[in-house]
Image (cartoon, rainbow, N blue to C red; front, side, top):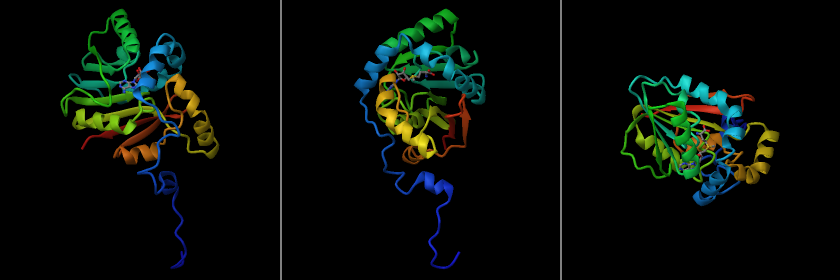
Amino acid sequence: MGLFEPRRPNENEEIVGSDAATRALSVTVVENDFVARVYENIAWFYDLTFGPALHPGRVDAIQRMGIKPGDRVLEVGVGTGINGALYPAECAVTGIDFSSSMLEKAHQRIARKGVTNVRLMQMDAQNMKFADDSFDIVYAPYVISVVPDPVAVTREMCRVCRPGGKIIILNHFRSKSRLGSWLEKIIAPFTLYLGFKSDLDLPAFLVQANLHPVSIEKVNIPRIWSLVTTIKE
Ligand SMILES: C[S@@+](CC[C@H](N)C(=O)[O-])C[C@H]1O[C@@H](n2cnc3c(N)ncnc32)[C@H](O)[C@@H]1O
């Protein structure tokens, strides 16, 4: 490269972009009230629409979590409790959600399945009532593109995770392809009514949430969902 030849950004720089710290994570903006209303409405059919299609990712996530006997696990946005029976019996799981309809389904499911190591609490993930460093693993499956402020939720997840513990996010993020990303931005205002934003920007989210993942793996089929694992320093 000549002395004054402009340096070409590498692929990673192009994706992250120089404005990653400030750019909007989605073309949409939502409030807690809106999200709560959507989930009150869709609770009755959630398992049919988001159950089997997203299940391989849930199974992979819990298998790769490395849960040890006695671990305290927090599931953020526990929904209908669809993950409840997947956790090993020797860990203690706390599941939080702010939707009473989703939690009602979760209570019914864990009773029906005889799951005894999962407790459920109604709570806003953006303002958790737990003390700092309360959990060994803090896991948010299919939640981070649902909440109004993903960075605030991640900050709370990091706060309640003990140093050396794991913060795990399972989610769909905006495609790296131009066409995919354009489509996901176009449909995002509509997917809100199904309970999620289709266009969450992963590189900008990681920068703004100050997350430095140890791994980002693709899960589900098609492999357009990511399992993002970070160790709290
Ligand atoms: C797409 S569902 C995921 C449910 C479940 N984790 C799963 O694997 O299917 C998202 C859940 O997050 C909950 N949620 C959304 N915003 C929340 C918030 N601010 N605090 C707590 N839960 C929230 C919704 O009520 C809903 O149950």
